[in-house]
Image 1 (cartoon, rainbow, N blue to C red):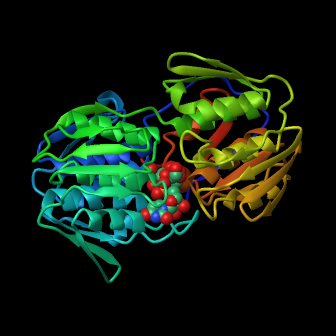
Image 2 (cartoon, helix red, strand yellow; image 1 turned 30 degrees about the vertical axis):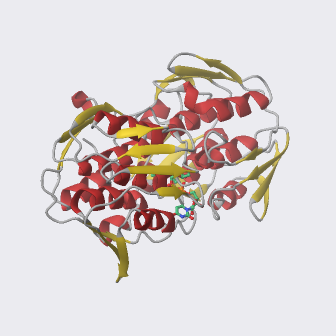
Image 3 (cartoon, rainbow, N blue to C red; image 1 turned 180 degrees about the horizontal axis):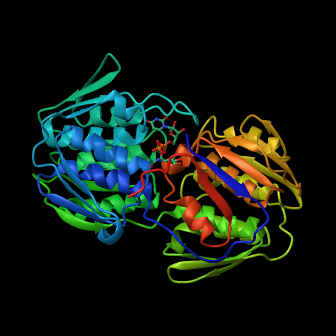
Length: 426
Ligand code: EPZ
């Protein structure tokens, strides 16, 4: 099992490039199910979750080519024949975002069998809102030995108000609605940029969608969709992670190939902490502004402070003068990084959904355990400023959503290397 070895103390200096957004690529790849034509996606990140999605689509009968290097991180997907519209548990259990194939499958074929995803480290992660929406659109959904079985002659338009704001729930049902008969009106939708990115692809495929990126989305169903070529958004969470890496190490880092407009809440927060930020057209420069000062965060749906950057911000807060409170509103168990940060010397207490971080504390290197994708990133940030050499175990969590992280960080001066088998060397 791979490990990272990180020696702290180096400020990050230079330019680091952001890859395509995993959380855009996953729904966009699933959208290819909606047509028998070829869909070409550019700027696909080379991360494990994308490989998992390739396996999933291939297992259903799709042709999927994943190119890297010269192929500019491009994928070609053709779902001409879906010979086996089943998302098998062996794959779904490794990536709960597999539930994103449910809506497209039922819309395209009238039948879908998708393994229930089960929970994960950060919470129960139910998909009841996906099911409720598909039933409102005329699907009959039954549960059978851990699988959801959905059937319909043809989905029909409906008025769907989400009880809770759900990103993949919005994406799953949006895809289903593109081929439903009549109009579907969605309210209380997720407004994340990944929803807008998916809608841009769907419209390029011939879908009739208005309002993506707002709370209200209106879809006029069409008979079929055709192929398209689409470039995936830059990964705002990876970009935010790099901004915090530059800030925590007191460096001077240019985060390139990103979309600053997607990072408004983090940029504002970092400036409140005393970090110097210069925003360009598709890059952001982060520099130390002297001693970091504490500033509270509460995670909210977009455009609020993202839950996917909460763990990384907590690491940064250990280096800020004063007391920071971090309140996690989205997931019920997203403080798995806290105990590991405490083992490195952080002063953190947790009460319910709020963690209190007292800084500034000098962090000591330690052997720590990664538990989920973003908690892992938090431990990397802490190790970059800890005194000595830290060992981070189970970095496969990071490989799910960060492309060549250790290479990118080494390129701007971090002392970080991977031990063990090399992940997916192409
Ligand atoms: C997406 O997960 C992201 N994953 C997550 O990123 C991200 O943390 C999350 O949105 C919130 O921004 C992908 O896009 C692949 P939700 P998703 O449905 O869609 C509850 C990462 O690190 N809920 O918006 O699964 C749910 O339990 C990952 O890249 C229901 O109750 O999250 C949670 O409390 C981690 N019923 C809240 O809604 C449902 O049917 C928000 O979840 C669906 C969700």
